[in-house]
Length: 244
Image (cartoon, rainbow, N blue to C red):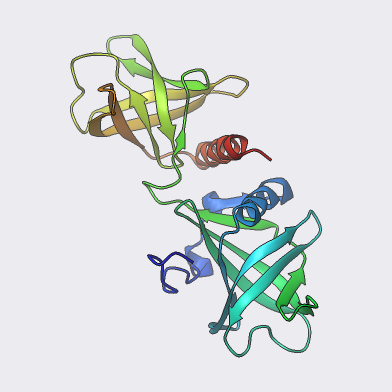
């Protein structure tokens, strides 16, 4: 666990505050994110659903389509629970993004003195995106953004990075857009994928190390299906960058 992160940050979000738009529903997406947590050996705080004060810190050591295993490195009394299966909620941070999932697990000794909890993998994993986190760098050949400008012009610009809450675009003109500029009916285009319509709001104007200009934009309100499609795109790009 990072020294900058406390157990308070690892507290799970209450069920009523979890949005469907944040969930990677279905085994392929959920398992892919859990495997990334395991691959990067991300610390996971596991809490009993019936008593969130009882917690343990561990790592995912196995993640298959039909099973998950978490090796506990440190735990308070009550974790693992005695008497077979129990309901747990787990929280970890993957490159600054809070990842949360529920799992029904039971205790199984690993044979070397450590404690392992095993069970079926969750059907949904919640990736609680923060606005400035989990930005995936984009190369010019990957995708671009099309802006519509009056009277009836379209401007295609390269995407510098992309997250579930916004993107940065390479700005080709010397004249800067005003902060707060709104581009309605914009769209994100990646080869082999349907275009994603969106509204963009200019939030900040930056220059990179080489002096190139870029505009940091936030998404305007997105329909649920588009918000989900953007999150899936970000997840796919992140996974392809790190490999299977």
